[in-house]
Length: 312
Image (tube, rainbow, N blue to C red; front, side, top):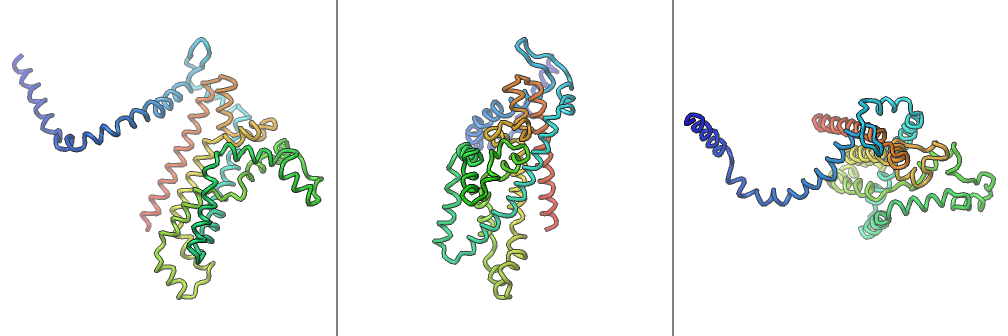
């Protein structure tokens, strides 16, 4: 008995020696400040994610949950609506990646090169102010624009093209183009500010040297500004891909996935499976797959970014 007590005392004594009491005394209050945030993350983010992953292996109804192993995931490959929705997702994601890597850069460079700082300031304000408008309000405005008596058809009739005016969101062949065209001219305030901040980080000496060497505006953009904006471009490409992988607000409000299922996206298929069909297990399986895709895209982006930094 005394030998066991001595061993326990030795273990406790060694454990106390390993604890950095000075660190705990100085950093303890900071850990306590962070603790509520950690608890909220665990309760409202990590727990639902883990619960959803477990539910993806179950069939849930009013009688409770029943374990069905991989049946929900097997349904993914026979769900034509879901498989077609990935085509729509790819179209929207690639279209918006193309947009985010072109138009906001051009606008940011144009405003950055204005000689008047006052003009630069007011142009920045003009592009940033729309951020305060709720996204739902913007989508509702565009839904009216695409309606039979909406703004686009009014313009078409005014310029003599009334024969092509119709309900754009009700046309299976035009609905995806209509969704992609939403928010034209596609200069989101956040994207613009990120590129503008990147331009401000370029050393003025580099730009002055280019001017002295006689570089044209286009040559300066292609050889100096664009290469130095690649970190911002990679960031926005990642954010755009992640956004469209998990987003379904636009087709939900615009068309609810219609006409038929012509504008369905995986996120909306998941939403309808859970909230309309009450198929929690299948909806959770779709959500798990989308989470895996987001994780893969993020890891690839981090890998590419790290490799680029290593080369530099």
